[in-house]
Length: 260
Length: 249
Ligand code: FES
Image (cartoon, rainbow over all chains, first blue to last red; front, side):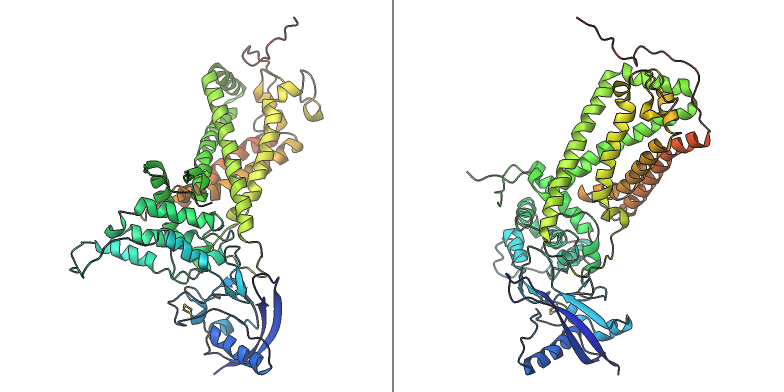
């Protein structure tokens, strides 16, 4: 079992209004089988023992499904391992790259204000969902499983889009801090299914309106989001969102309120 | 009363404007190259093509107006999105690794303005040249390079034997190629034109057009500098190309 000492440069910021700066720490005897967050836990234990403030970072499930974790490690959102959340990143993967020094930063986007250190407020995503990322349908009692036929390829595609865990890595990786990949995935997974058709034109307009209102940047088709996404959400969904919006805006008779 | 959300106010609508205006300008560039390649058919063919353009004012002015509108819309949208995107990340990363983007995509904000300045230079040289340099005046101060209204062939070919004309031209054409490499692909994405069966063709088309246009435009100064096309000693007179006589009241 390999252990290694690592130099960490961790972004420390007391609160949203603090300017923040990097602080240098040495993580001693890091075990290769630790997850990245466990490595931070150990660093935090030392800090607590010395009476220092521990590093704040977000996490919940620690199994790569909730989307709560997320930091930028040496310039990679969620670290260098492809299709992996920060909680599922393991130190052996970092050792393999020969890295001895880690720069750990929060998601940087004006619409994701830092709460503390590495934890950011992703409430903007919640508000995009609230704007239209749902289906208002009266479900009543449980219905027969196959009452609404959905072709397999359509349900598969909807599942691909629904894989988005809303972690915000797309925003973090985008040169424009755009939320296009997140919004597109959420619009598409509902818009693909028969139950999502009734609200399709309103949904895309409301969610895009909210996305813009939150101050995210625009998509310039670099494709960084797709590479950073731990779930491999494709930028094809962004094209679909664009198509849906252009169609909705040019064909729908009802207006959508502007969110400004 | 609540204000309604309009397409052009959304970031996606602005990208659609950029895509559509880009396609209009691309269409012009293709036609422009096709016309200019007539230089290889000799001075008469080239000059007659220039005359023909004047004889169809609807085409000439229609193109000019559409292009002017396209350039204005393209720039206005680009500026609006650029300033929004700058504001979207006020604190920069200490370290940031690019994983997917390419040189062309990252330099759009450079290749665009370079193109703009190049086009202005190009217009001053060959479109407004006759208004700036009166007959017999040496263009750009080069000996033997005088403006000839009825001989656009010479105006172009002689220009391309001088480095100060060739260098901006080559830079402008390279910026065009790089801009189109990202722009053409990007336009499909912005307009939502994607389909699993045809998606790979979007990049292929972008590469093919960017390379074809770049090499096509570069072939003209290359040929002039190598001496494959030479200034003509023939004299031409086309009333359509001569400036309207100034009548003193
Ligand atoms: S903590 Fe849940 S995805 Fe990482």
